[in-house]
Length: 120
Image 1 (cartoon, one colour):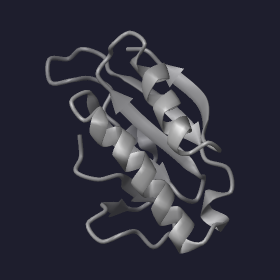
Image 2: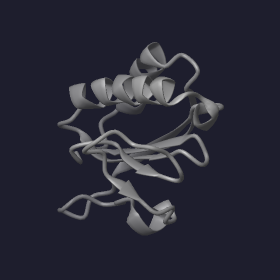
Image 3: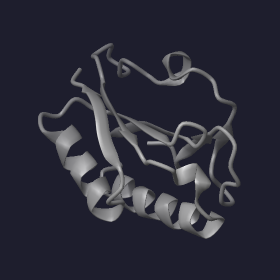
């Protein structure tokens, strides 16, 4: 997994967080592992996140990062698009893992909603 959550869109990230332009995810998110096997991914919306205070945003990022660090062995790519309030996570294809990770994120960030998933 990348060391931190990759942020795109307009925001003030914490020190050390990778920030990039709003490049379409299909251009940067991996779809296959190093052996050519398909990966799985999911999206979660965090409504109105970009309109919250910097402290609230930072706390939310910390909570998400805590969950993702727990699953770091299976996470390949993470992007949080602040402009769209959209969290994208690409993982190794393990049955049930999308629901497990998204439920763990929702436990820490109750307003986060699973929008879509793709099993590799």
